[in-house]
Length: 221
Picture 1: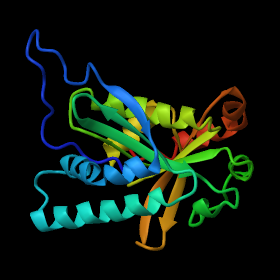
Picture 2: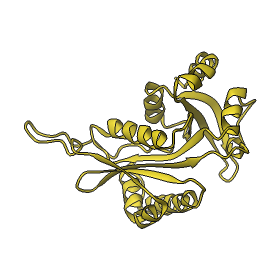
Picture 3: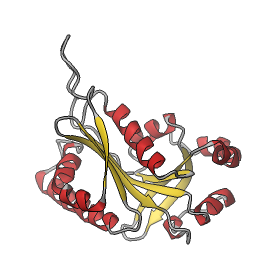
C-alpha cells in the first residue's frame, strides 16, 4: 500500500462551510471500470505527491503508477473501491494473495507459521494502494476505503507493503491495528518495504496474538 505524502496543506472549511468529505460515498468497481478510470486515478496519484518533485519525475511516477495499476488489474480477484463526492476523491485496490505463498517471496527471515497457514487457506487479501485527495479528513476516508475493500472480500487477514520512509502511513496503519511483520524485498526494484498485516475477526486475531508484542518492537522510531 504505497500511500503517498500529502500535497501542501489540506483545505480547511470556513465556519459554516460544509466539508467536501461530508458526503463521501464508497463504490466498488470492477476491473473494466477501473481501466476506464485509470487516467483519473493517475491524476489522483499525482495529486498525492509532493509539489516540490520535479515535473519530469512526476510524469515518470505517474506512468509507473499506471503500469502498476494495469498489472494489478490483470491479477485474479482484483478489486477496487473508490470514494466519490461530486468527483473522485480516493481509491483502494488490491487482490487475493495466492495460496502458493509467492506474494511473500522476499520476506526477510522465517514467515510466521500462522501467516503461512492463513495464506494457504486463501484468506489473505493484499492491498496494493490507497490514494486519497489531500484533505483534513483524508485519513478517515483512507480507513473507510481499507475497511470496505477487506470486508467485501471477507478476508481473514489484510496484507500490504509500505515504504519504510513513509512514516505518516506507518503511523496511521499502526493506529488502525496493523502489525509490522518485518522487511520484504521486491527484486524487480530492488526495493525494500515493510510488510504489514491486519488480523480480521476474533479467530484470526487470536491466532496472531503471540506475534503482536514482537511486531510492535519492529516499528521505526
